[in-house]
Length: 525
Image (cartoon, rainbow, N blue to C red; front, side, top):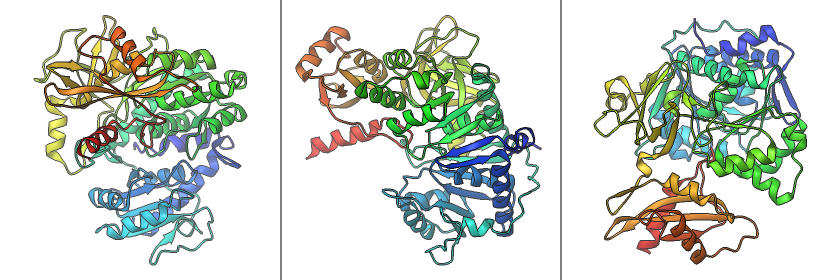
């Protein structure tokens, strides 16, 4: 018996009356959350869902997500969380590719007509049999013919359920990759993958936080970072999750003070947003600093300058880690009890091995950049229905991440860049992350992204997109002169563009692909 839903059930017996989920005025205790998840499980079983089936889920950070998520797991089915920003065509692709038998879709709200988009995708999918609308009004009728609501599915169902005794290698979750190098692939994560990574994540920061653990959940629950490091790990330790439907720096700041948040986990752009909000409004961070014990960053490389500035403003340490959807996700972390090295992703976590290799899968000398490959309990079962892609990614029994890093004498790893983001300029390798780190040290720079743009003679040229700090007046010419002084002649960006914002994913990663596409359109216009 190794069902991921056990991490919730274990704390029902220990802390039944403790708040598990907080969302605005809604507070669900562990007993309430588990009872609702049991009703979902009973309702799904009544509608023919059996162990091994796939149930898709489109839902932002509202209480319906954990209720449906753990309800699906209890039945022995695999949950397939989907990005809430997908188009109907993309939803249909994911439903078909995952062989989803049912699709739970939140009704959405202003600016996010999720139910209409979701239903359109459902009707385009060939094999999905049930559309379940998740609506705030449990008594509401569905506007879509032949469908039901989550309230109707749960109505009259028992609040107890005998959780299916899944095996360790049974699939618990299918998470789809971003598809930056082709159509999205579904990473099959087992109950063992997810439960072990939640356990490792919990033990990485529990000693620092102590008995009272209140975590602000601003990361999307449908993303592996938020799902494992926050949702599963915090509930595993009996903590309280404060949900934010959408990250907003001002609202996050107020919520952290109001709920006396002790733990925050986010991507670099969230830390940038919180710091910018404090600086712009000259806010006193004392009410937050009095309770906040630890911050964790992942999902993308955290600029060292941003790390230092945030820590000075909030008086709390940020620990950086590393992982991917295919690794459940955490495989490397700046672990408590060891030296913390800003700019490093730390050392491999318990049960994980990492190596750095060249293009021929040969180990590179320490101190030299190479691709991270990993193996251990967190590495996926494989890509769903894609044996060739699985074999390619798992060459020699090691998962090939596509990320370039180097390792210091103490065994700490440092991300250099994504292999696919490498800029080849006139035969020289230029790593965008290295240049972004340097750009962030300029007093006028708030955020920066570097990409390669086509060049007839050199193959690629370096371009930097920069958001200036409020009130900054630095010009392109001044910035260019500064860059030439700070960077090697073959590295510094020949093209600089100031902008008010950068395109980002729902998880807060800068979309360099969109920046590259924008540049391509400029050259063909």
